[in-house]
Image 1: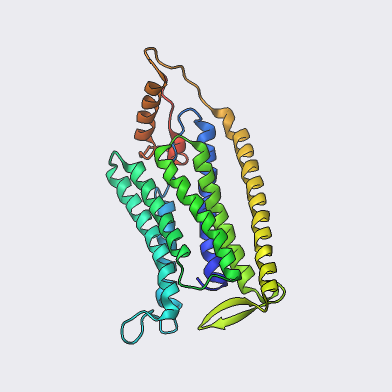
Image 2: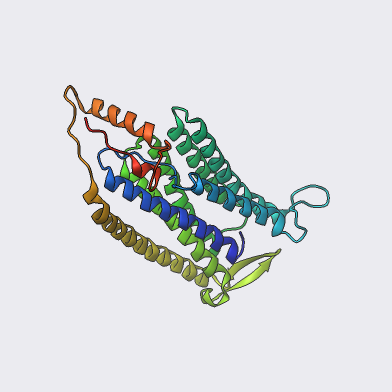
Length: 313
């Protein structure tokens, strides 16, 4: 991961998944605002587990690049079977991908068996994946005290938001805002990975007073003085704020545009007599939605969560 493509490719994967979730959550909420339940992943018509296969394939490629393709010897170990210091970061990066692979694999297995706690456990596995990502970036073996460290500091904030909102989604599956923020944070992770790749490994984009150096096979940015380093870090902060503004504006406009398109299709139904309080209503909605959220439906024309027929009561 310690190069341009090692950041751009994972960034494109996070960006694609984040946009996929953001669009689907907005569409699902626009169509069913009263019975919305967050979905940890979204099936497609022809290949039900396409999203999860995408994560498995992407994670497998990342692991292979870190441990077998990237190293000069095409294996990460020393001749005595130990892990050399300059390959510690490769193992850390590969472990991040490994748990995303575990998450996607178990999400498929849980969908096959459909246990009662399927959605909660799937969401918990996603939270552990983000937690593992945050843990390994926070305690990274690479020296991140310089300019690269400033970029990783902002990345850790985004991962922490993804972790927190994923955990919150377990207890509040009906909250659209939690799902919305989580999806936007994944989009931002992807954008920030791409930005890091270009800004840290393109010589023309290195701030004044700083330059690329080879540190035991790993290219790092070092600044000639404290003043140059302070200026470079301040530029990263400004850059992060710019992207935060742009992504926030984009996400709100996307929500407004999709709500205008799909919100008019909302179907309303009268509540049955006999409800004593709102808790009864929520239990009924949960029962109906949980049975249909990940269920196969013949003749489906779109995403499974979007083809739920509202029962007339």
